[in-house]
Length: 333
Image (cartoon, rainbow, N blue to C red; front, side, top):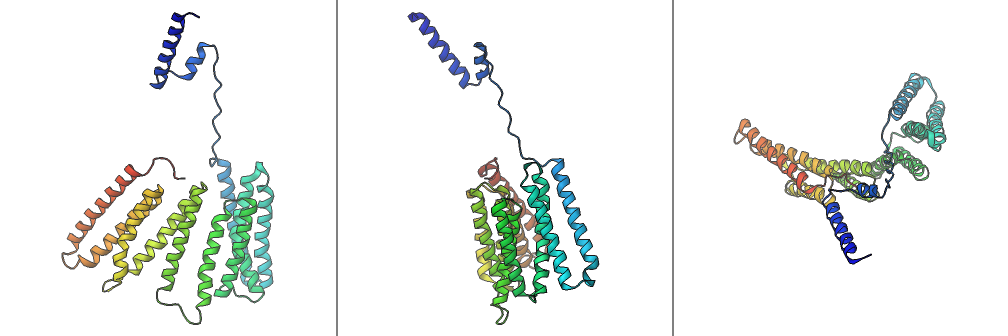
């Protein structure tokens, strides 16, 4: 190959590189020169909710409704042992059917629907069984034992079956145990002032920590669900702890704006819109509360409403700008 031909090849390759970088030519077009057309890679099949799956869950809900209505018709005339056998037996039967079909790849959704039915029936089944042996499930000690047993059932099922539905049920059971056991410990002495409010804030913090953990494992639904309820618990309870005029808790009224600012900051750091939405809504609530308490009597309701409306519009615009400038368009991890 002479020097002139080599120079021509180098110039052609350089031109191709420029065209490729500018997007004016594709790899397929280049390969066609050699008579080779690349095979199109198959598109990944997305896990979407199809009509069959929807019918499974609708049918499962109807089955659950039928079971509840059937049990309710004879509940008052049945003995305690019969109630326990019927309720717990229905839950175990639904679980067994769900387990069988869930382990079959072709009928996984069908099995999942029955696992949901069993998870909804287990609280009644375990509660009536405890009543049979003399432990009242409606009292604090019985509710604690009931919640602990349900947590064990749901968490073991989630661990071994890898069925996602048992994860939120496990968290709900643990939350009920958290409240019931605290009530049991304090039933003789009584709780300190605002104990349950602080307990709720503590649970909200735990939800946020769990949500952050699940964000690292790519469980977006559970992350957003835990973030939402955790923030509701923290900001809602903190708002209630402020009190209302004339009985105002100065500490919580001073600290609440910092909680809101921290939530807005968290939305940017975590790139999560749930933080942004909840912070915006509770900022609206705080503005309305402050306007009602401090301005309605001094400047009158019409002016107070105008002030509150303008501030809410400003907060709404700020929230929109935060979303546009700092939060990525892609889905949260």
